[in-house]
Length: 306
Image 1: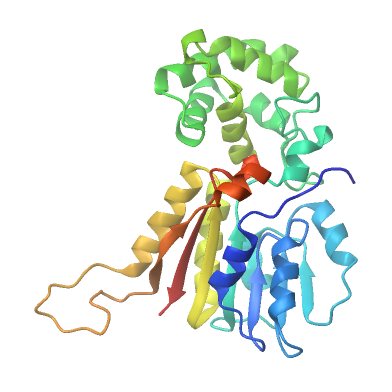
Image 2 (image 1 turned 30 degrees about the horizontal axis):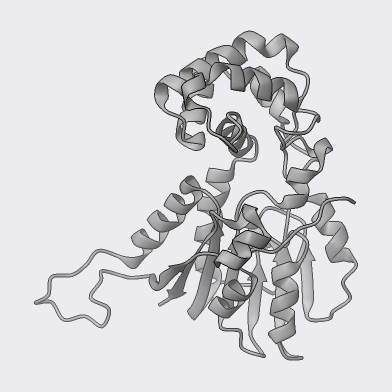
């Protein structure tokens, strides 16, 4: 199993959870276990950690752990409410979600996430089930692809349309990640190419999000996590790009409730608040970014269940 993973915002995320020795916590994105190990290190003998991941390789790592305080289920984090019989509504002290793709997934060419390495057009976080990127591209239409590249990749509308048109025309000869990357790079106007930034970056991100239903997964996962947290429980979420961050911000803002007029007395000054945002939003230190450049866009948001 090649591919090393450096856990981003490790101490900051675990600090945000404010671990109690006898508490019950859930790591919804186990990955290679970096955050989970740090949580276990702070738990006492009566504490519990429940972890999830849909990646088969993450399940292999988790299976090697023999800690009685630790339980693992292989499934998307949106299924956390049904993954463990002993986890019910209001029963958790903290939930951590580290969104996006992991370094091993990016670095293993055979997973099909990388535009720099020859691999199949796969991009599935669970590469044993579901539609591959090749399947998705074969089934989609030009308008849908353009919308996905624009909304989930962040490309300007005209550029997204150019890319979608080029990809549709090239579908019969798209056999690998490098084939797709080359078509996208040719479609992006030369004046928009940036040093150190592959022109296919945003299109690959957009297709990956579509293949894995990441938007729906995040929305369902945030709702599930909030339902499982008890009063005072912590929701900590690490995001890596603007779309993820916007989804998390929007969810927390909605859960804070509308602000009441000043003349109406209320303990929280909000209408039916469910969560309270705890500032500040944390970013990796300069040292962490120097050691792990992939961490540069990470943001950690914390909210507390009311």
